[in-house]
Image (cartoon, rainbow, N blue to C red; front, side, top):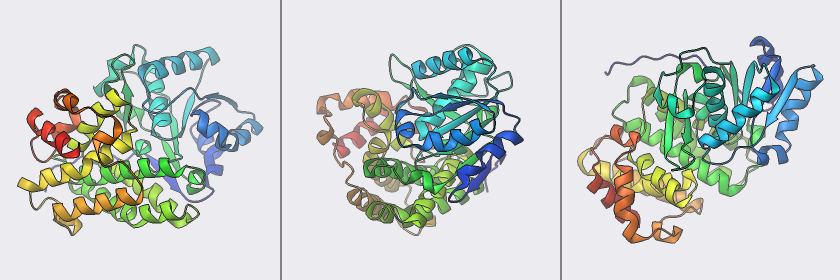
Length: 371
């Protein structure tokens, strides 16, 4: 059994209608002037009003920053920090939305409290000063950002993703309310859901895996594989939506206690160069990475009750139900660009934790297989 250091500090509240507990959680943390970081879609869906109106009725000062988008960049963080500074004396942050909103909230917290630029916090543990207490409320079952101490922020000029982590950046409390996922479009359910599945499967075999991460990853896979097809076929299936939300959170906890692998290393250059949705890019590469790993590490996935080829086939079947893309060529990727993508993938941090060593030439093989 491998050494592990399990440091659970995030309170997680699950259940339909638990958004109403937000005010009590803020009171417990001493918040009076609240920055809510979200995105326009969440505002338009009425979720921000549901969260904010009771807070304002309780005489709290609440400021909504909604200038975030998918794959947030350092520019989004900088604009958010300027917004927060203009409001003065923010003492608590709420990340409300998908992974992008929650990552942006964490990014703003870094720079607002510790100064400098987002790049200063690349890696782990570079925030020397205390950070503001924060609360995470996911509205999609996907990234599991609410369970992690890392903010994934891309450089505005190069779109290179940076993992900026610190235990102080963790949300103090998390609300998992399946009612908030009711209005999510099917395409987003598909992309975020396959992302969560990839988190469970990659963290389960990561070289950093341990008893704790495997515990979370196994239960995440069980919940996600049971509910993914159901929620796509019937969005009104509250039980399935709840299982997806908890499964994504557990997969995020698995990442927090282990790491990811080559599918994510392959996905980041695709997102940076072609603007693909992160989940679509990861899902496209995941079956190829599972097969690649299984060629030399045949017993990797036996704890899931399947071999690598069977598992890859299961992932492909889930993607088919979700109508997710299966070939790079169908997404505008030029074959002559594959060597450059492989070169970029070889520099990705997540690839270093893949159970089978992945070199630049291996990434090229993976991209060609997915082409």
